[in-house]
Image 1: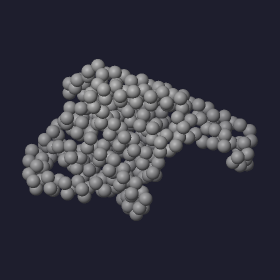
Image 2: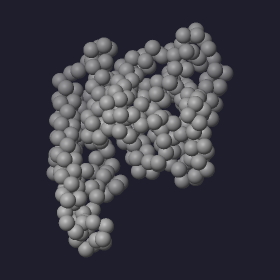
Image 3: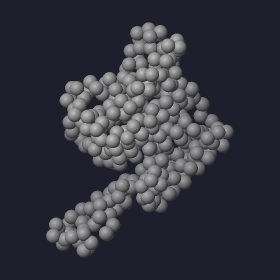
Image 4: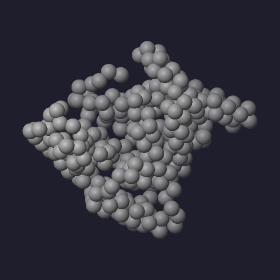
Length: 334
């Protein structure tokens, strides 16, 4: 997919998050199919759709390059397992009337990303990030006490998607969306196909026994999986990171509204209190990220304007600043 201008990029990004936000309504109409069957079809039909995209865009060679790299293929295989776990738990949440729990998982995801930056990438937290994580941890405690159990659906969704994002961002950053998803679904396809064959042999499969409409809806899962990802990939190429970061809240807000307003899920006081704490944490995290981004840009502009910072000055002689780190902190002197 070619690069868009920023205005169309914003539309593409918003479209991706809105489509992801509507998924609970889609999965509710697949109710005759259980979560595992839905995920198996999602993997197979996504592979079919990706194959069509690779054919139209003539990018099969990019997939071949991925498959010939043991390291890249191994990382994408791990990403595929995390993605399948995320899909399975999300569909389970929708089909067991816990869409609000699923929305909590994606609200918590930015906090998980910050935690991974510290534990895996060994980055240092700013004070505001510590405050945000503290509010997030308190929210989990409040929700656990209110529920009488740990909100495991939310935590598994946040952890699996956070780890998936870490692999895609740091491990296989150079792999484009369509070849990457094609490789991931190619890893899942043999298991998905075997599961569906066994399921139908036992008489429990729903693809052929509930009419053409149901079969078409299951096949549509490939489109509804791949299209938002391709839209997001196109948007991320042209939009500022701060805009992408703000757009990510569209999906969990839609899930929350669908769960409460359309599906009638209960919101007892403990659940409201837990969500309020999460929203406070996200507000602190977002404001801090915006400030850090502005600070990094100001320092970067100052570095360009400083005399003696041209190409003739080498590293370590005081003539340049190091680049901003992954957490968005301002550059530091080497």
